[in-house]
Length: 297
Ligand SMILES: C[S@@+](CC[C@H](N)C(=O)[O-])C[C@H]1O[C@@H](n2cnc3c(N)ncnc32)[C@H](O)[C@@H]1O
Image 1: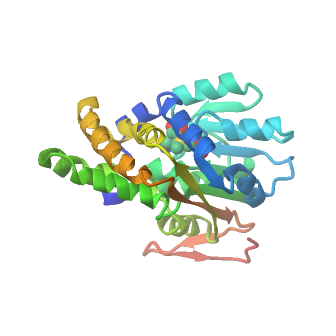
Image 2: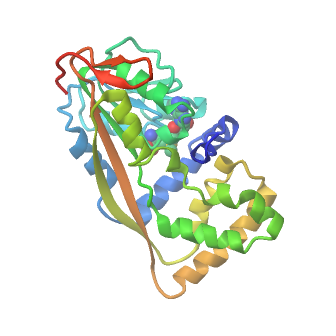
């Protein structure tokens, strides 16, 4: 397991996403404390949907994005899949007009070329075999269809991760040695504008990357600590270990906000690709992929 893969432990993910509770804490934090450009209008600007497309949202969580599309008058078929049964139950209860199914991104139970558009928002970094998932996404896209992955940039919330690293230096030695790397590593490290762009290019043969910049501004430590706590189960740490870690994090954040509002910058990445309209790729013996035929991307 490479360093970027330490955050995909299936048991920890299952616990983290058994319900939408942890995600809800993070959504609320972003809603209440973001200053600057908002995510959803930027997603719409990138996707350029005309309302008639069939769309699949992979790793949909509680289904907020498909629900927003349908509520906004989208006429085409909208489907959301998530590997968590709890998320699917929540999504179905919240938006009965969208089709929601439990599925792993790496095994999508849809026929080839079923959708005009596929989205995977803040989820590919959780997938153990990202090339396999991208292969599935490409397979279920019709030729000429578009794919959008949303993820976090390498420097996303770097001031927050610096604070976590500082908190790790305040921990008793044995605990710090065991958890520092795990706790301070951004969740999205396995799929950023760098390795994510490369993986999507390999799967689709074309890729465009754009960014959305904004910031979180905090005047007290409580919302930051609450946000931090929402990731405990993702790291697989016990409540006892976490209490110690949380105390250290609170001390660091309190020192940040003491002298005035604390800004944490956010750079979200949009990775866009199209399924080409031709046979696309032939694979050579050494694993390199070459385009064949005349392709319209
Ligand atoms: C950070 S949440 C993002 C939810 C939603 N897309 C959003 O942007 O708000 C990640 C979601 O991906 C789901 N997930 C993780 N690994 C998955 C996989 N291999 N296949 C399908 N869903 C997965 C989790 O259950 C969780 O609901």
